[in-house]
Image (tube, rainbow, N blue to C red; front, side, top):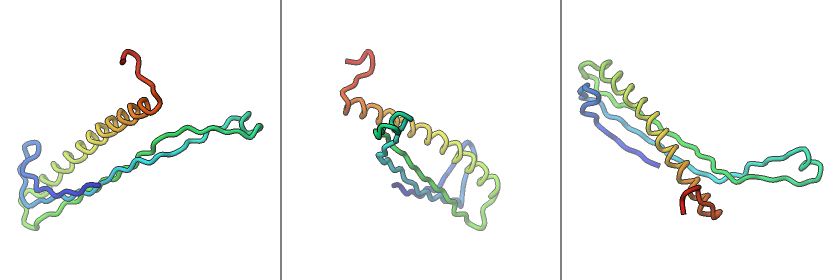
Length: 118
């Protein structure tokens, strides 16, 4: 879980004053078993499942604005665009990092090594 507060000064050439951003977020990784059953497994009473990992994440940002902000709409628009782009980039980056870490951990637990790595 994380929580932060920031007073932006400048983003993409837009200067800010009277704006404060609050963000709260979390990431949870949970082990799950995914059941896979075939018609033959249903007939003979056997079933198999595959261990997997479920990732859940949450992020919320709110802006606190002073009443006397000059160019309020310009500041809010610039900050909103920046935050949306940043969120997409960070989500993809963290998703890739977590995926790589989980795959590597699976290889370590099961004694597998990728081709070409000793």
